[in-house]
Amino acid sequence: MTVPPDFLDGSAAAGDLEALFGTDMTMASGRCHGCGAQMVLAQTHAYLGGPGMVLRCPDCDSVLLRLVRSPTRMWLDAGGLDYIAIPAPA
Image (cartoon, rainbow, N blue to C red; front, side):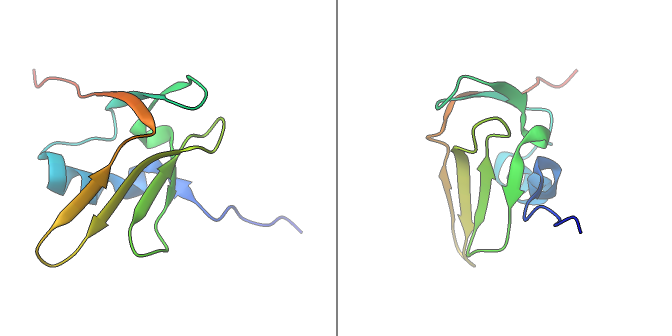
């Protein structure tokens, strides 16, 4: 019996990230502060079952980004990423 993973791919976080940044963030890239792996956010592992959203590195499982929403605010912690590069509009 195969146990399904307890995460989704980073595309599952697209709606909340677009609400925050005002653009599709699935193709934004970043580098993991923990292991140096580079990836687009769609490749991360998204955990959505808690009070917020957590994106983890697909290589080393380090927390890359956390986002929590309330009715009046959004909190973002991207301390696990060395950078986020957002593609410029054409």
